[in-house]
Length: 375
Picture 1 (cartoon, rainbow, N blue to C red):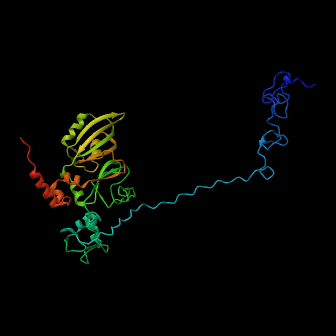
Picture 2 (cartoon, rainbow, N blue to C red; picture 1 turned 135 degrees about the vertical axis):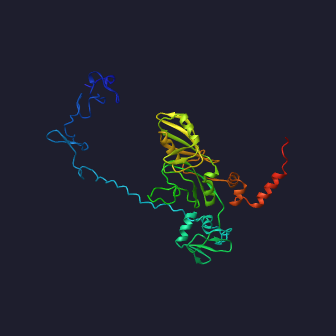
Picture 3 (spheres, rainbow, N blue to C red; picture 1 turned 120 degrees about the horizontal axis):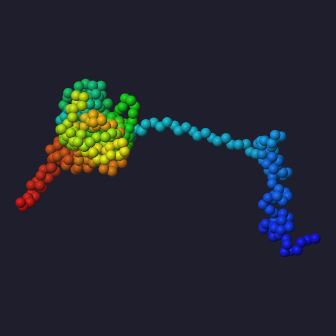
């Protein structure tokens, strides 16, 4: 007999009462086609009409069904192997193109000077490299090959290097460069280590460094395209102060650092006065600010090692009036021509061609016309 309408369970609701498990409502333990409270045996095979799953063998262990057309499986796609990246050739800066309205190089020096200096002023190489080029027979003066750098040339001489006329002397320029760690300050390293000049931007002309920083030293490095300027700025007689920030492992008292003001002799080498200030302690390390004027090879490391300290980081923060400031590692920043002339002084600026004689004379007349302050 059909139960009353109110006793029939509604679709989508769990049945309760004596009719639980019957009709549309099913309990949580009941599956379609089963009985109330029935749960599937994991060792049982698949039901008729169901999708093929894992089959159980006689021992009860499950195994993967055969993959084939009967089972409806596709052949698995083998993932492609990543192709190895091709080796990149080292970057070689492209030669700068001469503007169309600029005349070709004359091959003549700007004034009377030594042949090696003329090659260096043209921006081709340093003086030492120029002397080596001359000895190799790569330089000609007035069509004749020369083998000795003991030769003066002037405006009447025509110079050729590797068969090409000598480029006109470029204006003197100066750059601030933040040298990262791990770069050697040389144009060619026999050990094949990366150099500073290989990492410069491609638009940079051929430059040379003013002084050097060793492999593990970072910070400010000045670059220029003029050998005479580089030689003048790196001499201790110039008197420019080089300032460093040093992190070292160990302990030292300020009294021991104060004794460095009178200089120190280490292994037969005399080092000049050094200003050293103990800034702070950081765990087993200390930070020291050091200032010196000579800049001998590994001078800071040797002096602190003499005091029982092991330097693990060395940063040059200034070179004379030029500061590192917030220059990013690997970045290059040009110094304005007027700043260079002001720091070198009027006499040296005129010798290097940084200030025209007419403009300098006009500046002197302007200063002479200024009224003196009343005393």
